[in-house]
Amino acid sequence: MPISPNQGSTGGGQTVVITGTNLGGATAVHFGSKLATITANTPTSVTVTSPSGSGVVQVTVTTLGGTSNPLTFYYVGAPFKAALSDASGPLAGGNVVTITGTGLSTATAVNFGANSATPTVVSDGLITVTVPAGAAVGSVGVSVTTVGGTNNGFIYTYVDAPTVTTVLPGSGPTSGGTAVTVTGTSLSSTQSVTVGGQPAPFVVISDTVVTAVTPPGTAGTADVTVTNTAGSATAVGAFTYLAGPGI
Image (tube, rainbow, N blue to C red):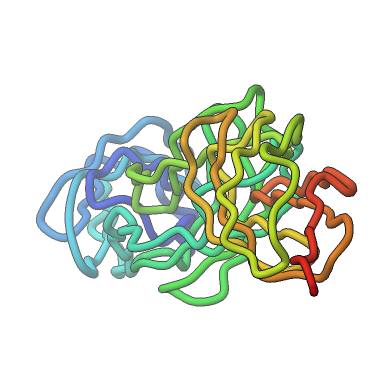
């Protein structure tokens, strides 16, 4: 006598179908000591709504002819999410993120706001998912749905690739150390700034302003590149390294 599905949320409410023989006129279906609600019944099946519970319970069907052999049903708790590998990414989506926690082995969906994606289950403690495209730039909630329920708690931010409009001042000594102001768009999620291909220490001021300190370089023009989780923008030759005087 099969039972499908054989697992469900600790909160109950799962539609469960039990198939077998001589099941017509079922008077009770027990999940452990609790009664389930019978919603449909034929001589070969009983459909019920599971009651709340926990752990592993035995399910039996009672008719006027007696009580059936028991079947095993597993109660699964709601998932717990511990960490999201990336807190932001491109508006177009397509990047893969990792979610760690517990109770993830039955994950069927990960929602980024209103958009759903199907995860790949690696283990009970880890799933990966390809982020769907976002509706707009900004933050959305992330939820994981399993047999045990849905768990919220993470925030993911969709961002645009940056742009760079100006770099001021536009020149400084080859020894580095020049404080420059970079203006543009989508700079609040900046991950790195390079000048002439070399990393430059930076501070995000706003979504349109980042300040950086030039590293040492060689005399001549240098590209300034700003990178965030959605991509990079390069201002070609935006900074000029000036050689010191010689006598």
